[in-house]
Figure: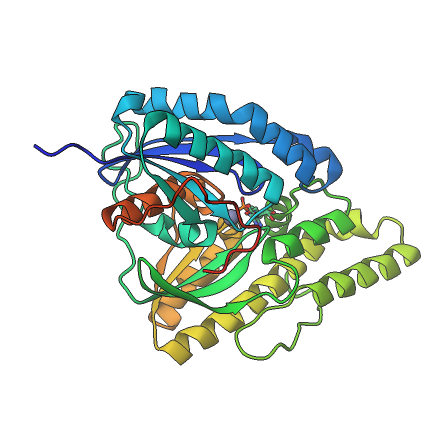
Length: 347
Ligand code: KG4
Ligand code: ZN
């Protein structure tokens, strides 16, 4: 019997320190340490993120190795997120991965974080005895992936594991940022996306109208919406100081609907232009219940087949880096100790 392929992965591009282990393509461990330190500042503070990564990385990796029940000597390669992301955060993960690979004398695999989000659809848990999720059906190539999070908003045309291109992206804020900034304007804590989702469930989405951007092609823009929303709230609060609290559910439902309308309108154009009906979604915003139900509605209306991974694989995680690393390992696609992180890193 041939030796199993065991990939240990590190993800540290933003404010989550994560490590995962995949054995022959099956996930054995997926550990994540979130950084609560940013909550009080209403957003991620890069300097604090780097320091927290430095504190978290060894316990997180140690935990992953223990959870997977493997011996470090069995690891075949170390995969890590090279970018895009915050430079200080990436430096911690990259340096750790390089040292660990050198110590174990195993190859290094660099992973593009955005490619990881897309390939998260291929994470398989079936070898994990604690898994509650059955092996899900994976999208067939070609498919479209809408990656929406606090840092990214992209429509990716995925022709194969390593043949993908961005056909639309935001020219300013990300969709998650639009949620978080709207929440901040209403004095809701960070990250506000999940709270807007929660209050929106009880509100009337038709109550308030916000201007949508007119952007050419498949690109997105959310900064004008944020300014329009801020002006609207300021005007209303000057007339009634309790405006937000008295109308919270309706405001949340209306702004959420606007963000989703913007995302869906471009996604529909992308699907019809490419003639693709296999639609996948990734990133933290795919947790949004309204976005999910709207997508599933399209299965009936437009004959789409929709793929939404488990939430743990939508938000930043190391399992997506491990599965990408595994596919790269099979292609002998390794990097060297000379590698450096990239804050900007095109797909
Ligand atoms: O992927 P992620 O964990 O981190 C990165 O930004 O890379 O995404 C976090 C983003 C935040 O902007 C958060 O507000 C948003 O995802 N988010 C949501 C929901 N859950 C998380 N936005 C809307 N509705 C949700 N239920
Ligand atoms: Zn991400």
